[in-house]
Image (cartoon, rainbow over all chains, first blue to last red; front, top):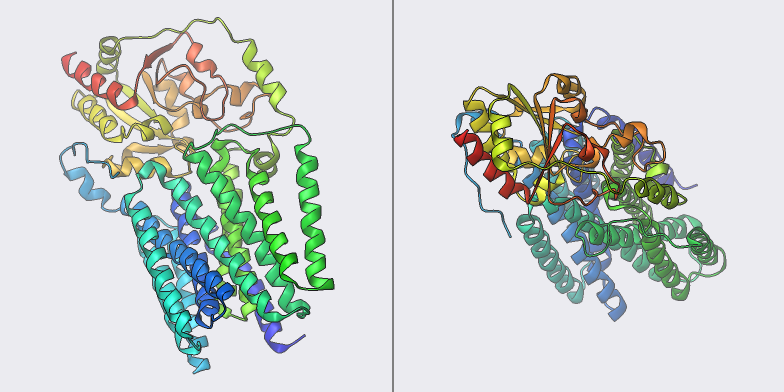
Length: 109
Length: 461
């Protein structure tokens, strides 16, 4: 087994433990934002997509690269933005109580 | 140069870990998301100097980033808060798809006889990424109500799924042991896409959040596998973090519903008959329904009211009207709290997000364990568009699909007002005994209209 592979497997195994440990105390109300946030993080595949797209020259690789970069960017950008939008709702609890009753805000279409 | 890149990846990995850590505490959640996003930018920028770009490469990356960025921003900004679960499904699916495509592109460069350590992670990424992509799209379609939310089952389904899995295994062996040719790994991808669809079809719409969470973990693992293929540290660490935390989150979610993951995923098999038999015995019972004035008076002269919001409130965008009702009641000295079931809405935490949007004070939101003992002291349990989370059959009907799920004790309140669009069963597709309870008054209509009527009735009372 090559040294590089050995290193990679080490990172892999340690990351499993970190991944489990780091979110083990999440309250129920944050399940949805957390899922959405982890969803954005696996958008790191955009690095892989850029990797294969960068050197593309044959038509097959161009198509694969283009589709992969588009999909992965959607994952990253959409993932982080939608998570932020969810968490925005949690901000400023204290301010919220001082404000008068807010009338219906126009829902986005 | 390479050392710098690896160090940058390390910084990115730390950002992801800190981001996740903060995302799981209410205080720092939003910050956590930003830290993770910063990690992402660092990882992307650090990758660029190492690459040798062809002209075509530069162009397709630019086009891809523009397309993906536009779709991502517009999708995430424009979507209604109620539709967020399906957006998460969509964003998850495209990540899985990208991962599978990266693996395909790598296999093409490896030639016919790649080493096992190159071919195995690629094949893994193709299969898991494709399952995640197709499964997420079905989950999206179910939540968007482009297709029925009820489980789709047919005779011999498990046999068909078994054959699919066997065929996939066959092609995996073919690629690894015989020859890595496009025919084999493209077939593999197609079969895995079909398996993804077949996997999610028999799961009911109400269980989609758990499925999305599971597929989210799958995509993480597919990304980690692509990291092994590309020998990329950032992909391995970030993908594995998501795979591990996503798996735990999936378990936490099914725990919150009082079910095992296996029951969520495979519960539809062999359960259809028991379900219909239970419903058949309930025909011909009477329900009471009340006018807005009756109910408004009842509310106005209560001391304690507990509002139980559900998906119906979310769909009708009635969170603001609910708050208005709570405000007029509080002005009259009525004590109002909201009872939030862990899976109210369509995702755990979904309801908190919606009510926070309407500026409902945090102290009024009570989680199930806190509030369940208070129902017996409440004058009115006002159920707004919730159904399965107050269904007593979760307690006393062992044949019911939701048997064992912890529910809110709304049935212990002195009066129950059940606001609903119709007598139709809830998302899980089962009848609710609580509607036939002698203490229950039904109030039919769109949640927002109904609440607005109640506000007027309370003011007049």
